[in-house]
Amino acid sequence: FRSGVLVPNGVDDHLLHVPLPPRKPRRPLHVLVIGRPVAQKCFNITLEAVDLALSRNFPMRFRLLLHSAEAATMGAGLVAALRRLTRDRRVRVEFDAQRTGVYAAIGWADVLLHPANTETQGLAVMEALAAGRPVVCRPLPVYEEQFGSLRHLRYANGGDAEAFMDEL
Image (cartoon, rainbow, N blue to C red):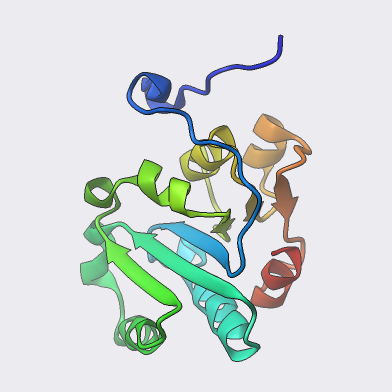
């Protein structure tokens, strides 16, 4: 058995899209973040990691693909941080992940950064791994149970922005 198809949420994605070709990471590295800008998804760690990479001039570009349903609940501090980050040409923030197309965003990415500290299924991680993209995330039980120690899955054990940057 040499290959398989991952079917997240019962949607057989390979019937809808041509599989993404594997590729070597580019310079600058294209880092994708998919998720909800809420505390349990550790969005503050995401922003700190992006800020850290930009301040140290790491050769990276960031695309933050966020769910718009949560946008109305974002505090003023989070909104201000997003506005500040988007002034940098290396950062792109998009709302409403369904309309933008998660598959296209994963195709753009070299790696998925996923710092959530709670997860039930980990669909974004599954989709990125199924598309052949590496993932940097926390060592959550759901990931360890589903994926174990896959070569393209890196665990940021410290859980802070520095640990995520080390793994990237």
